[in-house]
Image 1 (cartoon, rainbow, N blue to C red):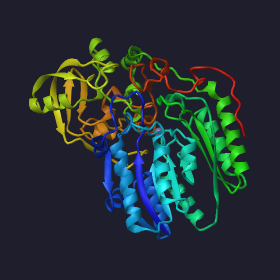
Image 2: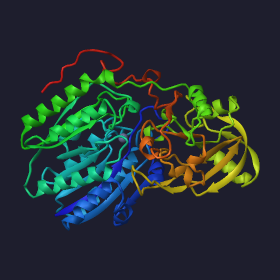
Image 3: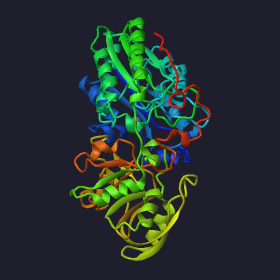
Length: 495
Ligand SMILES: [Zn+2]
């Protein structure tokens, strides 16, 4: 069996001021050919899962291209052309592949296409035809579309959020592809889509109410003729007409079972919508809790509205400015994406004190730069490796990075945006989170798994930003209405 492996993974946020440029991908992962195997083999990623399953049967692996970016705005068309052309070139060169195994996100916008993933799959299908299997792993936050279903054979999503089952999802996807090629199963996919978006902060799969939906999906997977049942809590910051949560069931040859079970699952999901409750707390409230904290562990501030894994640029100064205004002398770690300030810190030099204009330069709508006087503590190349449990082993590149100390606040200034939900970011710079009283992460929920051993006291703070949980603050003007929670209405799931 011959498998062509590719990754094209980015979660788009319609409101982000940052484009998904080639540079953004190069800063995260953009590699081709054999390097893909050494980069991913053994990692806790979908690609790691693909490779594991294929090695087990001694399949022939043709690694084509791996492209992923930190979450931001729509992806530039030239990036899509590069990935698409490389896959087509490799298929042409190698010929006779049995399966195109793809690691996708599922909520990617292109600058010219609102359904970037569906359009990408449609183009691939038009070239490779219907006889070659297309099997894809997807993120729990995918925005499933009919075009995606029509132009693929197998779609399987993560079952966890925080996402700690990446390798399992990749492995399961590849195994199903293997069984399909052997003629052991005939996957039939049906989805049920809901006119609903939910706050990511309220959608952890190990907590009520999402755990009830996942449990239901797992029960469906145990039924006769059912291969897979996925639930997708769509990335909510998609200002496109066809957005919404969805459920997807894959049966072995039975369209009616796939349809009726996906509808059953979606009906349950819809009926639970009012249970997904969450309200962020004011920054001053979280600061007060940190002041009162008598435990040896720090308090986590989750700046989800500036979440770099949710499309925000990571350059907000909202928390920093409140800490400075309140003259808070608690040891604090926070991060700001700001290449200009990094350069200024490098020019100032380690152990020297300087004046720095920080943050608010990328998202000028929700944040503003502030002046600080601080001492340069550390300069670094900004590379670190995620310790997990999500994406364990993945290397992140902050670009040139500086730590400056302002009062008791250690500000990590970085050139490139990266996910800030793993303590490895701070530890790579000599900042041990257990030694701090406040640690700022830029994430709605992913941090909870990575920081579980460090602190259980975390507050999602109410700050402005393009990934705010307060949807009414953002200009959703292209989504189909009615849409929950903007409208509350009766909806009947068909099937
Ligand atoms: Zn996700």
